[in-house]
Length: 163
Image (cartoon, rainbow, N blue to C red; front, side, top):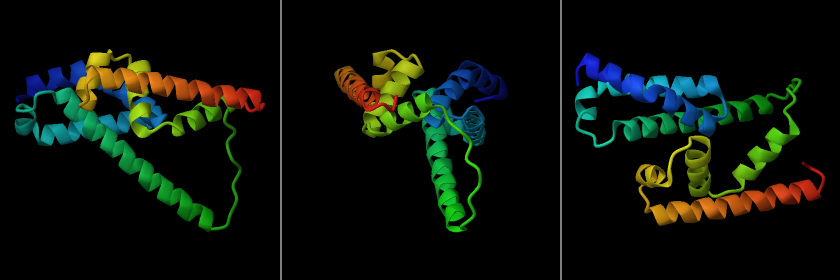
């Protein structure tokens, strides 16, 4: 893969990948960072990347793994910080944000990932199936079950006065 082909790859997928990783991370700067790192790694392996069936899927996988790795590091740092004993002022978060994050956390990872790809990244069922490596029927089942679970959690929260 030469420089022009790589530039085309970047132009074709960078913006979409940032949107998808933003849905996964919930932080635009973090999403941009992991996508840039994924493209950096792709550049270093561009000869191998040209042999891959779907460079976008390869980039998405690398960016997703980087996001998870960063999340783990941040979580460990937060745990270490709280052990320190100092209490700092907490930035307020809207109740709707907390409610949605809580509801999404209650879903199994496969359902959550499928819902993010389909509803937040606007990918069709067939593309979600190709990206996740499952049949379209499984994607549809995960979407259906995930939406039902989200509705139940959000409804329970509203009834209990949390939403």
